[in-house]
Amino acid sequence: MQVKFKRRLGKTSYFNQVNNISFLNILLLFFAFLMLGTGFAIVPGLNVKLPNVVTSKELSKMIDVRISDDDTIYIQGKPAFIKDVAIFLKKNKYDTVFIKADKNSNVGVLTEVWQACKEAGIGRISFVTNQ
Image (cartoon, rainbow, N blue to C red):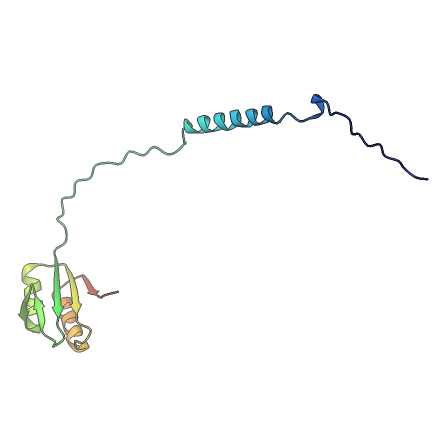
C-alpha cells in the first residue's frame, strides 16, 4: 500500500500566515512598560541615620625613624645615636613609630632601634618597606 501526498501549489491565504508585525508591536510595548516600570521602582532597604561624632582625643603622634645603608640613625632628618632614640621618644610623647631601614643596613641596628622604641613605651611600631 502506497501513501500519496497532495501538493498544494495554490495560493496561500492571508489567514494562514503568522502576522509578525503585530507580534513585534506587542514585544516592543512589553519592553517599554518593563523599562518604564523598573525605572521608578523603589529599592527596599534599611534607612540608617548615623550620629555625628566629635573626637576629643587628638590623633596619634607619629614619627619616622630612618636607618641608612651605613647604619646611621636619623630622627626628623637629623643623625642620632641609639641611646638618644628612647630619650627623644619619651620626651616628645610619641605613640607610633615608623622605622624605615635601608635594605643594606645592619639588622642589629634595626633591632636596637626597635628595642629603644619599646623602652620608650611605644605601643605601635611599624616597619616600612617597598613593595
